[in-house]
Image (cartoon, rainbow, N blue to C red; front, side, top):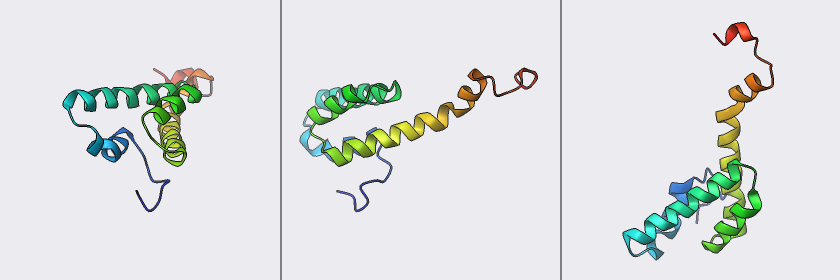
Length: 96
């Protein structure tokens, strides 16, 4: 367990936490896919579904909340420019 639970927690970090429990490549693949689905739910603002998946994968509340915050921060930074364009805050002459 990390000293600072609120460090950046991406899918790779969550995989590392559970790697010792995953015995076969198929288990690792399925586990990673469920993490990807949870990440997708978070990015589409469906946190309840993401929390359910992460809880069923065996993560505690602190790790789940930290993962959600990490994904939300990533989505916000990735799409801030797109959001400004869609909200009409960028002059059209700059879009060409």
